[in-house]
Image 1: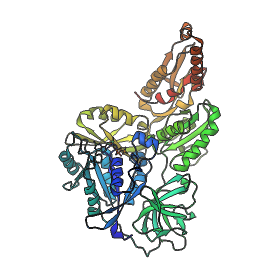
Image 2: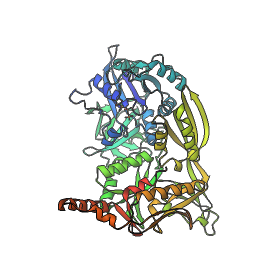
Image 3: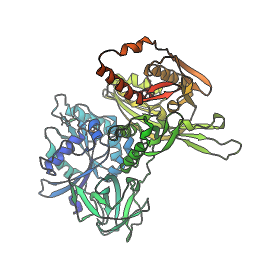
Image 4: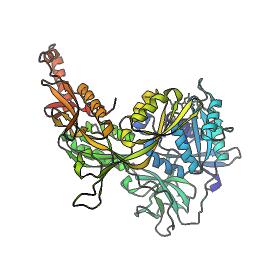
Length: 602
Ligand code: GTP
């Protein structure tokens, strides 16, 4: 295709502002699908994505649309993930485009996530076309939102398109604005092939499908290609695009976005951001910005039923086929038996994998306390040279006397909130050892920037923020490196026995409060037994908090029975099933839910 007729763009939007609905509408308007094929929200094709309304894996769609000048343009719409955990994938998708639609809800206005993505988009020199969506809503205030876009983001919104993805108002205007405002890509067909690996996913029929953006040269079937960072070589067997139906094409030229397949078995072999070139006539320089993504949050996953261990292993392998950003290795725990230590990009990523294992693979799991990666400096010990240990699991913490100092990862968080919730949010950040960096007001809203230890954020910071602000505050973060911290390992003892799954690294200053909270919650979560159960939090040998579950009186159990035989049998079956979801610690049965619930700070 002639470069001048190509437009590559993404959609920037806060969650729920209507990105998927708009994408569907653009597909519908340009005739990529027949009415019958037009399922609801075609771009978000995973169940969990649909349910949570979050786009996880990106997909791109080619729209052919005839503009006012009578020319048919090739518009490539790049769908990007919408959560902070997937920031690097977003950055590569943006690098593949020349512009973006900025979709802002006409009733909600600009949110922090939107801001973060807009700035990223501006950094990629994108032309940004503001779209005020949901103007059909009675609460819509397009003029106020336009003003906000100018004030907060500094974008000229005089030409912002007012639209409703739901009713179809303004959709043609959006398409025309894409053609008029977003620049065509540049590239040279006669140069050696240089293409970016934008995304990849596993397809049961095709193997790994790779989304590419061609910079220079041409990519076609039969070519022997090379991934420059990975160093691997592959033979291309398919080239095409999605409309969103899969369409095979003879080639992809400069400026174009589409897919290739090359009989690759695992997505782990395809790193997002890698440069693709040909073996015969390679380009000299790889594209800039390649980064290997590293998991930042780790936790243990153990099957409730030890017999499910192999099934868990297989399920993890299957999930990893499609998600190279999570890692796992076998782990043994004194109390939980055999399981896996898994690494994730963030807490949402963790929850997604955990949910898929439970739902799609029908596994009952115990998740241990999520932990970030700590750096333990073990130098100044007698037998070792300077040595830094990266700790992924509190259970592996070396003896305190061997540790010179501990460092923990920090983040810079940007929170955007209506004024009225600011007090509560500042307190939350303060309680989590935050250091306030900025506080600015725009209209009735405040933007606060805090530096926070990641470990204070991974548990329930986001949930707390949402509940304090009734869902109005938004949150975005980036990692800013490691800092020394006064950190200790806190163990939880149930009936005098340490529950390794609940041990965690905490800051000394907040250890007591955290320990007390854990003990209190466990007291509620663990059912009474026939004997008294002490629950304790300890640092080293020192008990810092304690609760006691009193013994159950015998006649309480008797009351549960009675009634006819079938009811009794059902009850017994139910109990048996319930039993399977319990874990034994020093003769105490701990329900599965307790492991997660106990970790949520009050
Ligand atoms: P994520 O995928 O989570 O990023 O959300 P999204 O931005 O894709 O939002 P989505 O398209 O799922 O829309 C969120 C909600 O807003 C849905 O209930 C839509 O039906 C609704 N919605 C989208 N566009 C409009 C619109 O123009 N008017 C009205 N009234 N509702 C809309």
